[in-house]
Image (cartoon, rainbow, N blue to C red; front, side, top):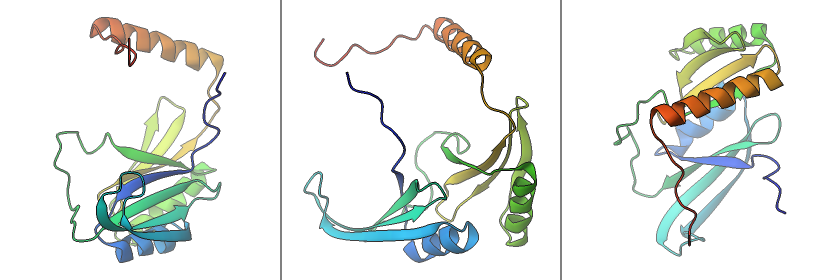
Length: 173
């Protein structure tokens, strides 16, 4: 039997300005620049699409990566998903560190929201990167427990019933 994936390697997002993305993730957030790949064709599809794919690592080695496609401008989103839904939540180790980040970002002229309390478990601040990607820095004050899992399972079941949701049939069924 297959087991689940062991960890996150990277999440890829679009950028229209590699220079600004590089500056923000290395100088502002302190990520480590790992590498870049430049291709003229998309390896997985064969499409002729010149791009640069850059990788920025967090302390645990997981990465946020960006695709800069030649001639494309990804400024702004064109879908109806509220801008607060799609975001990356990144851990900090202490509440004091969260406050230090808020002060640093604000001092750099980056608008931040919060500190926001989530169920007494997470304390978070929110801000946007130069690509319009919403980022959350969060401090988790305690580990989630079996009681949290059971409560969450109950909420999922109630939601599914309330909105009459059903999983899609498996492919080939």
